[in-house]
Length: 254
Image (cartoon, rainbow, N blue to C red; front, top):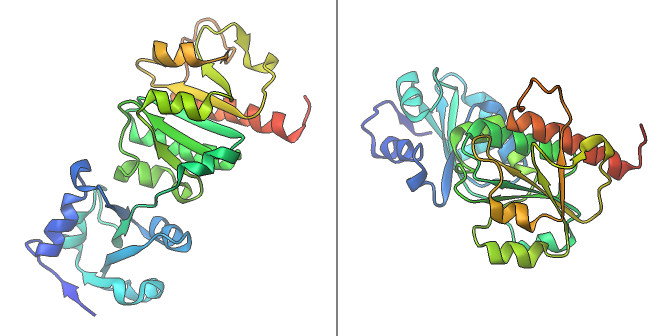
C-alpha cells in the first residue's frame, strides 16, 4: 500500500488543484467518511483516496485505491478547517438530457452563488421526490467541495443538469407548467394548485429570477409570511415550497 507523507509530492499537488473550479472539469474532491462511502455506494468512480495512516481498515471497500497519508498531507489537500481522515478524488457523474422526457417535477435554479445553499437544495429536492434539478445562469460549481459536503450524499441521488442556453430550456420545458417563485406573486402557496409536469424556478437571494425567466413562467407563487419580514433564506424557501408540492402530489389534504 502506497504511503505519502510530503506535501511536495506531485499527486498531492494535483489533488490540491481540485480545490479550484478550473481544474474540476472531470474530477472532484470527496472529504470525510460519510461523503466518500455514500459516493462509492452510489456507483461514483473513485480514482484514489488519501487515508489517515491509522484508519485504513475502515476503508477496505476502496481496496487498492487507498494511499496512506499523515495529517499534514490530509490538511493540505482538504478544504475543511481540520484534516478529515480521508480525502478522495472521484470522477463526475453525467446524465443524458433524455431523462427529462419523463420528469414530472423539476427544479430550476438560476444564478445560485452560495455552495451551501445549493447543496442543501439538492438534499431537499431528493427528500421531496423532485425528478431532476437544472442549473442555469452564473451558478456556483456543482462540485464545489462545500456543495458536495452540504448535499450530504444526495448529490448522487438526483440528476443535475447545467443548461445555459435559454432556447434549449424553452424547448425542453415548453409544455411544462412553469412556476416562478416571487416575493410579490399574486398567488399564495397555500392556495396554489400545481399541475404536472411542472418546472418550479428559484432565483438567487440577491437578484431573484431574471426577467427572462419570469416571462417564461405560466404561474407565479409566493410564501405568505408576516409583513415585517422581507424574505427567507433561499434553501428554506425551497424546502417549504417543495414540501407543499410533495404533499399535493401525494393526494394529501389539509
